[in-house]
Length: 448
Image (cartoon, rainbow, N blue to C red):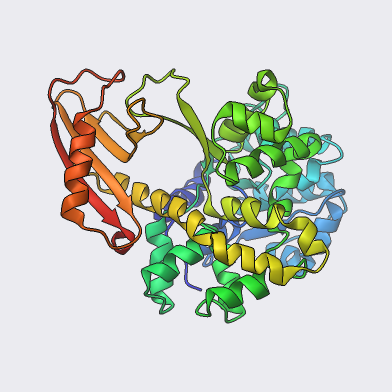
């Protein structure tokens, strides 16, 4: 599969490589599993001969070096290092001869799961290489954000303050994923929505589907072969992705994410379903919103930023899908009742697709907004029972642009008149408006 998107990130990495002639750089690429970190690096360095890719295995780094012995010799090593000290001593000799070297440590957090002693060796040699202006690039790449943040950004870490640049790799926008679909002869908006609902912006999943020849197959086949049962390709993906992050409190976070995936969105209801006290919810929500960026807090656009009139939503369709269907039906899947689970998913999937359609259309609006705006968001839990899918508001221009999302065919003229009337009834606490100019648009599945 061809490489999609990431033009800005590619340019950043190429600039890293160009500048090492002026001295050592220590950088990082952080992003969750399957988001395309390794593919990004390989794309940026495909014509580079002095680059060593290391997939880090847990424990002693000697096992990692054993995997790439042939590449080490090509690079100039005279033997395979048994530990990090031997590695850096050999690297020092080569760098002292002004030989530019690039080292990419993939899933680097695996080196420090049991002990952080090697962090001091990285600190020592990174400092030495920088002091001597050696032509070297050292890149830490990983998917366990909590551990990487501890390694790179906490003051107690030996590497604190030494990072020269960091790429936080975010999910690709739907517009890029849509181009992937079109390039693979998938042209139906309905099929786009269904695939995106199952796999979100995780580009590696689509590569796997293509490798198995399933990308153009029916959704039923993908569900049965890709998801159903624990021999399915994707059925345990989220455990691999999140288990190292959630750790001892995984049962609490699983309860919270499962409840949000079912459509429970208020803090009090999430706490009740997850089986925790509402007062202790504040100990968990920031980790999911800020540290892991899995969920976001939405506040009605009419309310002030500190309003308690809020709701929580999962940001990635794949995580929505997994918690709504796989985690919720785990017991049935373990008993071999894949057909029953399949039926449940097919019956309920239109409901989840409605939520994902909202995600896609909001992305599209923000990529090319019809006007400048100060605030944007939905209207919900209105005392007059008015709900609006999305609003852009410009206080200075005294202007509102409203959107309503409809999956099926509707009378757009009638729905637009209804939308404009509802917006005219809103009372804003977030901005000062005086009989604002109101425009609107009805968007449907065809607009994705």
